[in-house]
Length: 251
Image 1 (cartoon, rainbow, N blue to C red):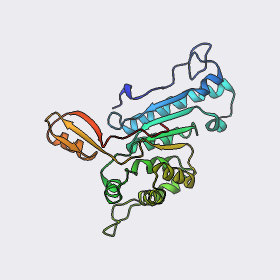
Image 2: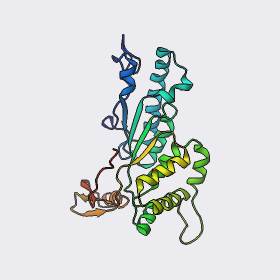
Image 3: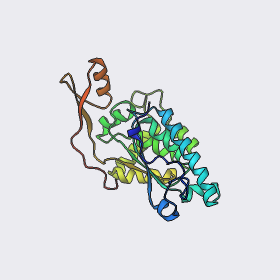
Image 4: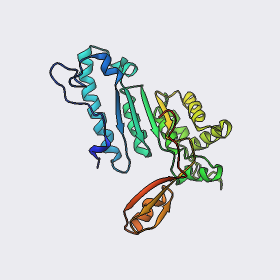
C-alpha cells in the first residue's frame, strides 16, 4: 500500500479561472518554473500501485492541460514541468518509465547504499558505492530503453567470478574505476545511453546502512536489516549511514 506522506506535488483538481493542472495558478510561466516533486519510498509504497496512481493522475491532468493551452501532446515532453523523484529499488525505475512519457525534464536522485546481490558483491571487491539502482534508472530513461535493458540487465549464468553479475553493473564499475568519480561515471553512462533526463547519486561516498532494532541489536547492511528485524520480530528504532556521508553537491 502507499503512504500519502510519500507523495508531494500530485496534481490538484481543476479550479475555475486557473490551469487544469495547478488549480489557481493560471500563468504558464509560473507553472513551468515550479517543480513537480514525487518522493518514492519502496518501504512504504507498492511498486505497481504507485506507478499506476501517479501515471493516471498525470495522464488525466496533462490531457486537460493540453486542451487548455492548445499544445500538441507530442511536443509536451520537451516543454513539460521539472519532475524530481527520490528513492531507490525497482519501483523508482518503474516510475521513471511512466513519467518520461510526460516530461523529459526528469531528475532522479538515487540511493547508492544497497549491500545485496551483484551490486553488493562489487562493493566488496572494489570498495565502491552500490550501482544497481543507478543502473536501473539510467536504463529506464535511455533513448533506446528496450535495447539497453536487454544489454544492461543481462546476468551471467556461469563463471565463478561473473555468475550472478549484471552486465550493466560491471560496465558502470569499469567506468567508475577509470574516472575515480561516481558523478563523472554517471555522466558518461548517461551520455552513452542518451538518457532523457538526469540521474544523480544521492551521495558520492561508499557507506553502509546501519540500524538499531527494538531488541537492542545493531545490524549493518541494507539487505541484513529487514532480515534480522523479521527474524527477531523487532522494530527498527534508529537507522543511519556508516560512515556518515555528505549529500551530493547537486542535490
